[in-house]
Length: 303
Ligand code: CP
Image (cartoon, rainbow, N blue to C red; front, side, top):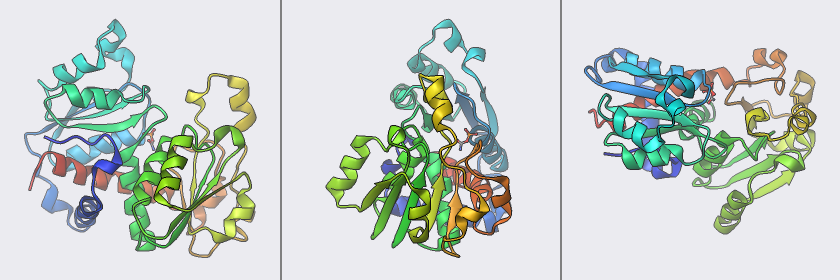
């Protein structure tokens, strides 16, 4: 039995296998329509979500399986003090696989150590979000055709943005990938991740200036300033609109740039960008469902 807590638990060969399965699901959905008949996915969401929870649920339905779960902590017995470990043991009696989102870093790992079924980390605090990375990787592969030889700009809240942390980890395994880390000084990438990049000899630069970085980027990954992780509302209000991508700011961008965002967006990408063919964030949303289908099949060992 295998869980997915950190994207690095998947080898690059396994990522290729998941990406290939997702491509095949896109081409031949009927082939997969009954693969999970009789199986149940439990979605245990202790923190709000639209895409991740609903795409997991849609994924399981499209595989012919069933879904149970809760979408907020207060409708579960966590509100009465039940631990994550006990919740995982209990849900193992009812379901075949768990997708868990939790505000505390490490909670899905604790669940996986106590469950008797696979646990998928659907986002843990400001730490990791491996299945968003799966969606990001499928979008990059379908749009750019490669993971090597890319300059990737991450812009916004790099401190709390868990999708950034997981995608940097995943892309760090490919050749000649350079990161441009664009953020205000209060929201820079955590030092432990920069230390890993330095130790592996992976190129990265830090700047607060999106416009200066724009011409060299192959991928621009915008992020929302994560209000829910701030202790100080004033600080959030001061930083939230640091970067707002508007059409004129793309004047010096590459014509084959792709613009990604894990969503939800607040102000950081103008809706006027949505019409630009380089805007790929709604492709990510759909690709997330296909990658979660592929992942469920893999972890349930369905052939
Ligand atoms: N990208 C993402 O995790 O979105 P949700 O918070 O809506 O699940």
